[in-house]
Image (cartoon, rainbow, N blue to C red; front, side, top):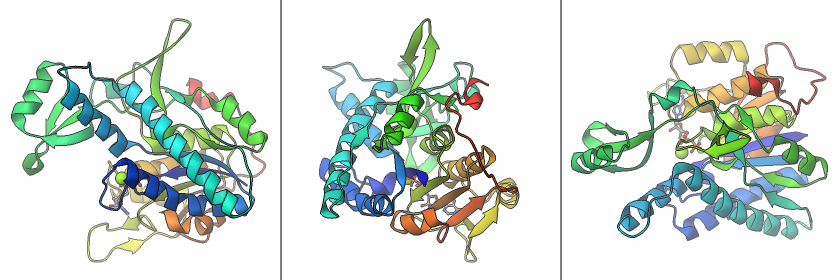
Length: 327
Ligand code: ADP
Ligand code: MG
């Protein structure tokens, strides 16, 4: 099967969220075991990943070096983290596969995601990034044109636009690589946000939700399964209460009803649920949310929160010119 795997924060950082180079290498080495299992089982993989803590590191360096070097913008942060994370995933996955006697071409692609310059997110930045700081710092940055928001006891945090991904510009390349038998790492951090500009595109100062991009890319490359690998085995009803109930297999309509009841937090589980719903609405066979170590079972539909379309999608055809991308 062709599978789109979206790796969350815990796949690339230490359990406490720290992201030194060593933490990242160790966590990625761990994550490559379940990925290698999928390859061994014969699946075609497109792998995408988050980059929040890694971008946080770059933003902190920006601050510390501001007296000497101009800060880099968020599109560059995206490109840089796609480079380092892609490089590390390729190395570790290659090693893990070779232990199993498997030789495969693995490629990490610098990937751009087109967003709409009229997306309402640009006028109303809400996605928090980087560290908490005090009010004085936040106000000083505000003078430089940044948006900062008061998060109460924890302090202030920068907020940036998180526009909806419209189209992954490298889609056709990704498809041809997968068709040739390569394992592809793409659209890390949701892809580098770009808008059309004259004959080409240019990067913008924004971030894109990696799970929403994963849904779009999964559809465009003709994946049958989208699996979102995170740090919990299931999405649950009544999150944070004493009677949490794991959600197992569920139809899209029933899942949408749970969304409407407000069960999924907007900055974390919400976009994952939105992503799997979009994926099955677009024709995917199933969208799965589960923990990294249940990956193989999740892909098979035997673990995690498994969302299926209300009417089975059969004989779906791949559409490289993703019509949804030009809406
Ligand atoms: P990732 O970094 O893997 O992309 P996030 O940390 O953003 O993932 O989101 C996963 C987290 O979402 C879980 O660890 C959990 O704390 C939180 N969460 C919020 N609502 C729910 C819910 N209804 N069910 C399960 N987890 C939830
Ligand atoms: Mg996280």
